[in-house]
Image 1 (cartoon, rainbow, N blue to C red):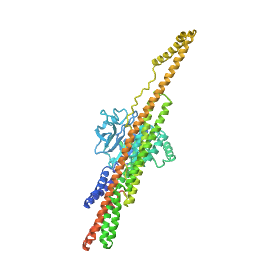
Image 2: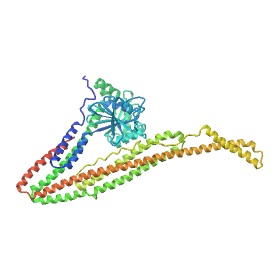
Image 3: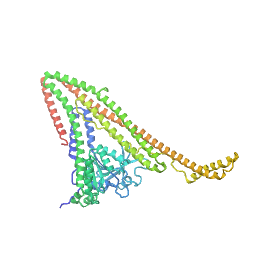
Image 4: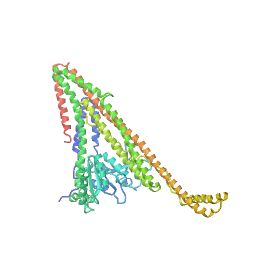
Length: 615
């Protein structure tokens, strides 16, 4: 049997559709130049930029030690993500195509900045305890590690993201993973074959499915657990029972895949389960995302062709039938009036946008306040039921992870509401313009995760034994003094024998009261620290939400304003040409009709090529 290398067997997915779309867009740009339409050329230039990097992000998520990093390594056929039994991934690792193997650290910023590092330094930044993972000496935060590989399966723009382990649905890592899935083209949820899916994993799968339409469940380590088939069947039943039947379940062995790549053993590669996983990732996911990007660009070319062709058809109608020229002019005048209404601040779509953003802003703020209030109440209940001196370390971790999770939920709500506003604005615009512009892709804001430092600045130490002794002695001394000296001053005798026991009892009561007072003080300090942190989070997140909504509003406004200007220019030129056609001689009309027919034919051919993209 012929041997072959499993990883490099197939050509880059989606390349043909993207290449065809690029060619169509280039022809569209030349047409815009020929027809003196720089406004439409700007539209196609933006589509050309999007085609230049049609990235397909596949995010790999799962609990700690489920084999995520091993799966990524096996998927791309080379060890790039650190794998260790004793440490876990601390930062996301982005594996993408490059002409040669290289690595960068990604620094927080807008836009993010990259600094090259040696490939052997990936571990230093990517794993917990690997050195300065997540931080640098200059105080800037490392947001992730980027690895560039010359692999054909990545050439079409496929980006595989290895994320930190979840650590439970409510953990900070889980919140960050949910945020990552919302901006991914597909999610690979990793669980191993040691046991069936837990309730936490099923909950995460459900939330990931709601945020990203394409979710696969990948069960790893089938070579290590003999009963993996029974676990697979149980997991399939769980997914169906929980309403996640559309989530496909695949079983793989990273160890077998690695060995198959090294030995170029096609049979072992099939046995590992990775042949099907690679096919799904490169063809179903990769081709699908690349095709969607190509189709989006092609739709822009179709819209441009339709505007220019509509202008030419109106002029041709007036030229071909002089008797109906006035009717054509009247129709164009009415259309121009409608289009002019789109350019005013009082237009329906502009009012809908303004009102919609205001409503969303109020609702998002109310939702965030409600979430923060519930967090504070839960924290108060937990702190009031125990001693913060014992529970505070656990409370800090719980508070930060719970806040992170609530912020992701608030961000998801913002994104969904903003998408609704975009749809409403687009609908109003289409009603007036009669042109199907499609829905604008709303900007996905980066959720506020771990930006606010938690510095409680509280003292929760219990009294030392020495301090307790001093408090008890102080109470005892007061009791003894009360039942010896004071009765003597009043002429009462015989109380001395009971003074010492009473003093000891009073000292014990005083110590108990002091412990209770200090416990109350510690609880109050802890609750105030929680409130300060939540107030700061609410302040920062509120600003971030308002900024995000303003960006969305500007994006929608600029998008539809540009479309209105395009329509206005097309209609104005068509009206001018139709008006001038009345003054032409018959010979001039005939020549112009032939020219228009030729241009319409070219536009029709370009439109047909664009409509054929991705079929």
